[in-house]
Image 1 (tube, rainbow, N blue to C red):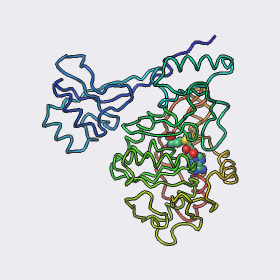
Image 2: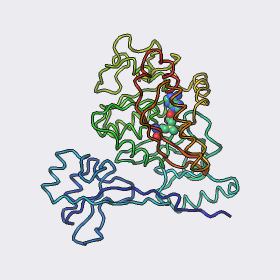
Image 3: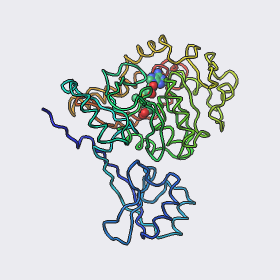
Image 4: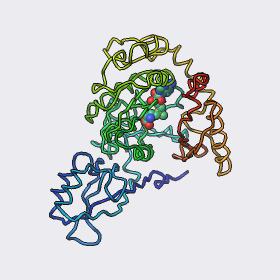
Length: 401
Ligand SMILES: C[S@@+](CC[C@H](N)C(=O)[O-])C[C@H]1O[C@@H](n2cnc3c(N)ncnc32)[C@H](O)[C@@H]1O
């Protein structure tokens, strides 16, 4: 029988910590509490200093990326300097096998040879981890829907998949059975958000429940966040409220192509402080395509390509699914070895160039993670070339986004 390699679940986080006299620990944590202190379930942000028991290490949140604390508001930095001598040291946090779960839900992918024991496995996990784990689910089949939501069977505990998780100092509420969520993308969420600066305008076409958009808004970016899944958009809005960043996020429930076309047709559109502002108010007259609708739940900024008011409409889903089959699947590509990976990179860059009908300069290719033994997830970053914004290229842009 194959043995479980627990090290495969490990995730190392390279963080920064403040080395402070131990008697100042409460004052410093109070000061940093508004999002700059490490905030992870079951992980203490104040730890012993291996070098001296007179000191403590106060671990900072992932949003502090540099030892000069440049990601921290000036006022907070000044108050810190008044409290103590600011000594910033690197701190590695390893989250191991036992750490991973989404809130109270333990998500299993039981392989075929163990399916006969699934109820026993689930019961042991449930009994040993209750009350932290209250629902044990198993993924059934492969994901075929475009919302990227797996089907689950509940093996133990209550039939409740609504839960809360923490990432990047933000809280995310979600229904595991209705929306896409992958705790193991945390590193990628953090990596990308760390590249954003306050005041940047971020356009998140496939936002899900907001793991990029919410932290970006917390950083002071203005975010246009869209997803085709109405349940994801519901939780995106809920999470904007929970994290008090509604004023920085405009949410949309559209096909990404329509979303991009709408945004790009209104280059000077002004941001409003209310993310629930009607689309008609957000866009100057004539700027929004004729497909705008006002949904029954009052979320007027939901716009659909076909003018219907349900994003679950099957005709819409199948059209998009067909289009998507022509391109890569959510950035996941089969990859056998290093050479194959290089070829895939080149091919995918070429594919993006063909579809944009413009040359991509300075692409950055980055391997996000291995999704399965022969499947890796990549991220290709590039600046949108000016040529692709020209009118005769409009059709190409539509098919890329
Ligand atoms: C792999 S998930 C990523 C979500 C999020 N960025 C995250 O990291 O959790 C892809 C998301 O794209 C959405 N999606 C799929 N097709 C779409 C389309 N045509 N337009 C807009 N969103 C779409 C899905 O509903 C899903 O939430």
